[in-house]
Length: 223
Image (cartoon, rainbow, N blue to C red; front, side, top):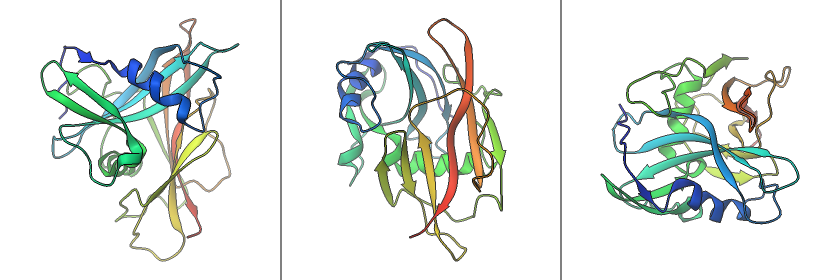
């Protein structure tokens, strides 16, 4: 169970993200982001070592607001072979120095997201300890999530998503790809694309209206 500490972080999460996001292919702004927290949820690390948060932020620096999903992990030491995923470090008021990663590059987040898609774990409230988040929706599809998946094997950022190749699978065939939506759009889950499972969740628009849309899905892709 993740424990939510009521304390400070220096630099703060939004400050770190504002410096990091303009380097990402999926960032739509033209300059320095103006970020506000808009929602999200958490997953628990079964080992209790890594914090896992799916943060939603809205950038209002452009002509119209854009809402992004940034999956984050918080670690007490650097993650080996994940330099490309490091967002920065921050001093936590209780836990000390934390290494903060883009969660698409962290095997703990990837494997727990796969567990969520497979129905083996539950989403947790973003701001409270040991409180499930019933607004996070998991939709199964197709043959379901294969057992034995691990990751990430490779991470590719596109204009809208981060594509994470996961494996090995106990089944023969193409390597599954876990797609993490970066630019969030409200609406129902797409149909007819063969996804093995989807995660949908909510966030708040700048005017306070509640939005709901797809955060992630698992699909098959050729090796």
